[in-house]
Length: 226
Ligand code: TZP
Ligand code: MG
Image 1: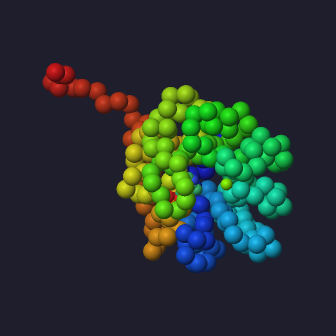
Image 2: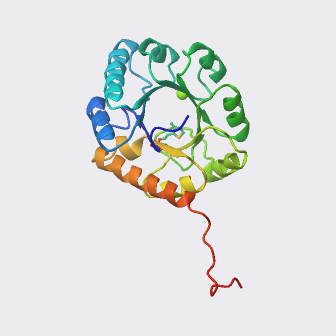
Image 3: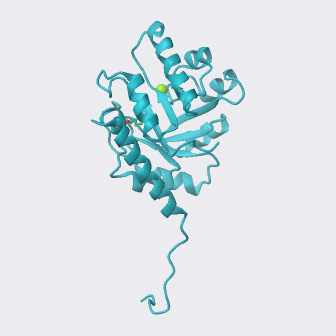
C-alpha cells in the first residue's frame, strides 16, 4: 500500500484530555490528514462501538482511512478500513486470517526480527518505535531513528511509519532516517489547535519527503573536495 497521507493521526481520548473525539477528528481532517486510528484502551465496548462507527463514517466521507487499534472484533464489526496490532495483541498472522481481503493490517515493531515477522504475517505497513522518548505510552521501548535506517537498508517493501515522541520539530530526522510517514498522538491530540498542528506537521513532512527525493548535491567545478 501507499500511505494515504504522510501524517497518521492516532485519536486517543486520554491524550485529548476529554475533548470530543468527533470534533478532534474534524480538525484533523480539515488539517489535511487522511489516515486516522482510534486508540481507546478503557471505554466499554457498548460505548466504543457507536463512537467508532461515527468516526469511521466521517472518515469515509472525507476519503480518509480509518483504522482500529488492538481490537479485531471491533474492526470486523465496523467493517473498518484497517486494524493495528502490537506485539502483545492478537498475533498479526491470526489477524490477517480473520480480516476480510483488502483490510489494512498495521503492526508495531521494535526490532528488525519483529519487522521481518510482521512482513511475513502480511502487514501492509510497519510502525517503528518509539523513535523518541514519549509520555504517552508507559514502558515505551526507545529504538531511535537508527532502527528506521536499519530497516530501510533491509529494503522492507511496505511503508515504514515512525512513532513515538514525534513533533513538527523533529519530524525531519524521522523522514531522513527512512520513514515514509509518521504516526502521532500528543502532537495533535494534546495541541491547543489540532487543525493547525496537523497542517504544520503535514507541511513539514511533505517538505522532508521532497528533499529526501532530491538527488545528492553535486559539487560544482570550483567546489573541489579537499
Ligand atoms: N507506540 C510506540 S510510542 C507510542 C505508541 C503508541 C506513543 C506515541 O505517542 P506520542 O504522543 O506521539 O509520542
Ligand atoms: Mg496494541
